[in-house]
Image 1 (cartoon, rainbow, N blue to C red):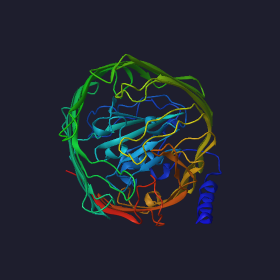
Image 2 (image 1 turned 30 degrees about the horizontal axis):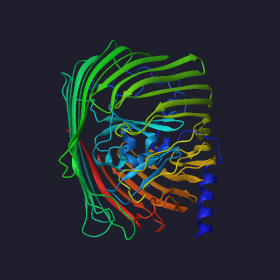
Image 3 (image 1 turned 180 degrees about the vertical axis):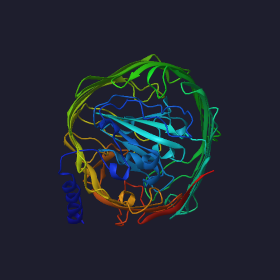
Image 4 (image 1 turned 90 degrees about the horizontal axis):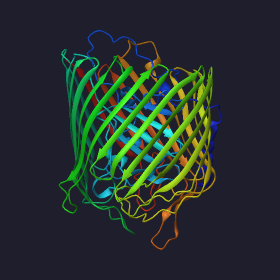
Length: 592
């Protein structure tokens, strides 16, 4: 067993011993638009039949090369991903603590900060944790059916994830139906309807049901039903209003393993609403612009917890052109982070030089304050780039907990990159301060985490694409010095992908085939502290995955296999993960 793990991990390392570049661009699973020299340049004129749509609510940049991953609509369709946690597993250095199969909690652990490293924004508004897990947001609760785009901005010790809701830019009606089945009574039934009218009115509706027993024992099940609606009105290409609502009901049974506590039952519903008014001096987000927004997030229908809610109001102003972006945003809320003021700057200071930075000051419940600052300098010439990052914060990690005090950290990174059609990627040295992350709320089998120590890590991602239809890509993370739970001494992911989209035999869009084999491997580490304070061991293991999907015009069929090697180890010690966990299904996309 040890020899097989060593040989498998050697393959991960071998696939990465190349100069670094952007990941998996060939099959559009991950694209790094920041490698473009002027990411805020106005797009080309829209094709015929298009109507105005709101811009994506993400930081406009400019950002240095390698600072951001972008998953587009095509990426989300062709990725073997059901939830946001599946996507985040592609980010270098991220450990997904899977409590079981579909339906169970899947918290993100990154940079020795545990789940505190994850910041979520839904169409520009912070997504606060609510319910029984009101310390961190469980990424497995975010399904992808209503998302048009996901942006992940990588800082030295945190991940900022921007969820962009679906929107439709043509007057042709668009409908999507997705049906999935699989092992352990797993099923998904999802539908999306989109319509726009020439006068600027847009309607988006979606429903999504996901159910499974989660491979967690008999006589239990996990179910989630989500309904979403978005109404848009753009009387001109430069001004408009958006109202949207998302409600997700959760009905999850308790997990009772043979030894130790499992996971508590969760029964309740989360509702998020937004109303935004916006205007710009020029189309496509260029020039002066501003918006005001009202947002509300509530948790209710819970038999054991009282209703919870956070209500926010925000206003922002910005200026953007192809070389510079400056924004100022203020938010007020009735609880948690009650006041927040922040500014962002991106500047192409000279040919081959990009400066980006931000600073914020916040007031938190119970008289606490939070201060943060981040700056980066990027130098590039031709395919080569050199980027330095510095992030500082004096902030509590869980505003919902009155006893959580501010933690001061200063983290920095230096990253080199290469971006060519055949070979691309990045390699970074990251220095992180010590931290004391809180335990995952829905994983009581791990009652606490040990404080992480100051660390120095090597992180790399790479992609080799010898021909357009074939690519080998992956990432590797190695804490050279220091220790943290769920951050194994060596951790890597590699995959080989064939995509027939890049053959010119068929008319574009008429036929597409994707075949992908992937593996994730890590060495022995720790997974937290037991009730008596002793460390919980995390065994080294290699997990294999296979994904097959083909498309004929608007019809797509897919098959996904996880843990194909029949591993008996777990992502979270004590919570088993199934062998040969399969899902399969179909997706139809219709126009008119």
